[in-house]
Amino acid sequence: MDGDAAAEMLERRWFAGHSTLDYRGAILARMKCSYSFDYEVALPPGHPFPMSKYPLLKAQLLREGIIAPTDLIEPEPLDIATLERVHTRAYLNKLGSAGLSAAETRRLGIPWSDALWRRSRLASAGTLLAARAALDEGMAANLAGGTHHAFADHGEGFCVLNDVAIAVAQLRAEGAIAKAAIVDLDVHQGNGTAAIFESETEVYTFSMHGERNYPSVKMRSNLDVPLRDGTGDAEYLEKLQQHLPGVIERSQADLAFYVAGVDVAAGDRYGRLALTEEGIQKRDRLVIDTVRRHGVPLAIVLAGGYAPTRARTAELHAHVFREAQAYERNAADSRSGAF
Ligand SMILES: [Zn+2]
Image (cartoon, rainbow, N blue to C red; front, side, top):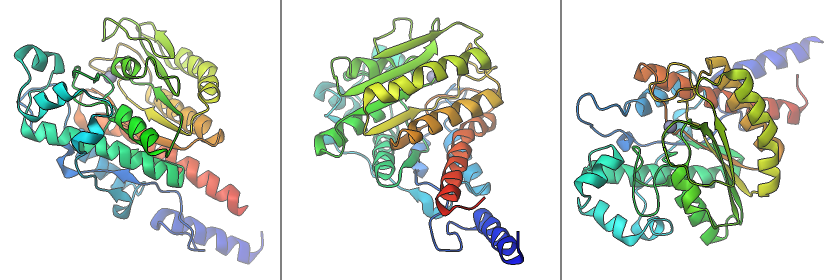
């Protein structure tokens, strides 16, 4: 390597660590992420849902330089007409008027509040924004979303609105996409998503989940891969590798969503699987590589994670963003012919 080449390499490395621009002014290795301060709403003391993982994750991604403040895009709450592409008028009316019954609230698992209703519309808007950004730029994410237990007419399992289903339905209605694939690797089956799209041939739903975990009654995805309690890295990654390329090929998707729940981790309060942190990194890398190498834009949403601490949950969620950045950096390097 001559002196100029070495200097250029050093300069590229400096910019890779310090700027959204490389030395030629090209956008480098960062992606748009939807985020709102109002993603976090107050819950009763001791409630098991780790609301504070959202600001913790955002802070961590900024600290590591995985995203810059200018990569954050702020959603506005979705309007009723957009929500109605998936959800029933009756259910939305109840949500908008504090009208859920005690039984419906128990099933939801989170107490209704005006802030929760607004937050649910914001997080769904964040997924739609991320999907639009992914269509424009290849890959984008929502620092929330993945509320896959929400059905058309009810919420359950901490999920009020089905953000991914709403984004898919809205983009299809606009003609922005014709077909979509939903890769749901949260440890719990994406039952709401499966039910919403059960008779929709243009949306391919894939769920790999704990067989004996919630929900006790599973809906039918286009492809369900149930896993035994205690499944570890090797078996998990082998099954994912076996099925995912076929999912992307069969779906002929114009856009894929990755529901990237980290409740597959060993020690998760609700998970019952045994993936290591390295296993989660490999899983995230496999999804990003497979989808992107097929030329399909990818929108990433968080879904569940119930590690012993909220900081730990945020740390596990950060891996998919690190892998996305690494993928984009490699892609940028191979485009420019550099190392
Ligand atoms: Zn889950």
